[in-house]
Each structure stands twice: as structure tokens, then as C-alpha cells.
Length: 237
Image (cartoon, rainbow, N blue to C red; front, side, top):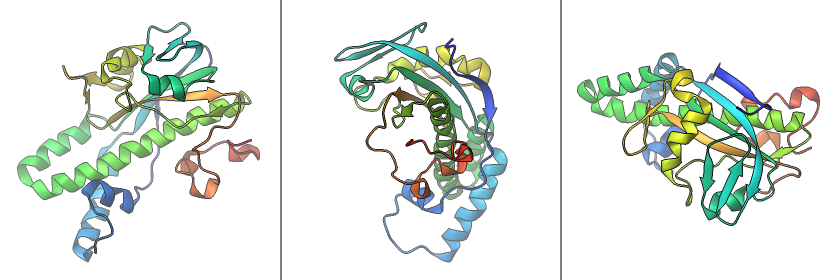
């Protein structure tokens, strides 16, 4: 495994989920929101937070080579292929790989609701999707803190299935992170993760600030999990 960063089964404390994100996953685009649905979302957020166990495992690896359509890592069997990931990591000297999950209890609750409360299942699914993205935010914040400790900067997270980075890297990705043992994540034959509310991602570690990141801590999605500001600095230097 990488010598730089290795965190096994870190558990994140997530206090809330943004209602607007839940509405986005429900397909709302500025329509009116009834008090009944608003209350149902709030109740479902509280229920999902009680059921979920947001956790992640992370590891860093030095970049050995970047070609036009692949990224090779040192001491790592994972090979990242595709023009998009190669462009994304063009000047990266290192990467952080992570897997995050809400755990199997969320899947069990989704199955229960599918049999007893179909509308409730739809709302719970949207809340859980928003929550696992918050878990990914927390993991990405750890990657940014690691980069800052090295005097470096990060790119935004890039997941298998984005662009032309194929989903079939998931098996190697999970193996490198020992995610089946650490987090209980397995794959279906079509490379979908179980528990279903799981995320894998790559964060590049770069020598200079990268475009496309938030310009202010006040609008940063990672702010709730940031430890860099405690040092009197920001991830932008």
C-alpha cells in the first residue's frame, strides 16, 4: 500500500443532509414544495442518519507515469485508463484513492420500504444518495488535508464511470483499498457496488492550485469536514 496516506475504516459524523440536494435527487427543479413533503423529507433525513454508518478507507500512491490515455501508479496494481482521467491527472505527482459507504443497514431499509411504503422508499433513496455524497465529501476533505500537509493541492474527485474511465476498474480499485474487508463493499457481475450507497473516487495531488474548485470556504461543500482552516490556512494556499 502507499506509504503516504492510509486510513482504515474511518467513521464520519454527519449531522445533516441538505434538503435541496434531496429534492434534486427527487427530480425537483424549483417547483413548489408542500409542507407535507418537506416534513417527510426532514423525518426521512433523521431516520437515514440514524440507520447509516458513513465510513471510508483511503490510500495514497505516487504517480509513475501519465500517458495520453492511462495513469500508472507506483506500488499499485490499479491502472487508470481513459483520456479523461489522464487529462484530469496530467500534472499530478500523487493520487488519493478512497471508497466510502453508508453500510448494509441502509440497503436493508430500502428493501423493507419497497415492500411496505413505496413512496417512502423513493424519498429514503434520495436522502441516502445525498448522504453518501456527504460521506464522499468527508473523505475528499481528508485527501485535501493530506495534500496541504505536503504543501500541495488537490483536484476535484473523479469516480470510475465518469467520462471514459470504465466501471470495470472497480474490482482492482476495491482490492487496492481492501474495501471488502474494511467496509464490506462487494461487486455485482455488472460492477455495481453493494452496499448500493457506496462511492469510489480518485483525487489528484498537484504541485499548484487546480481550476474548478471553490473560490471561498463559505461555499465549499467540504467545509463541514475541513481540518485545514484550524491551522490558519486554506486548501488554496
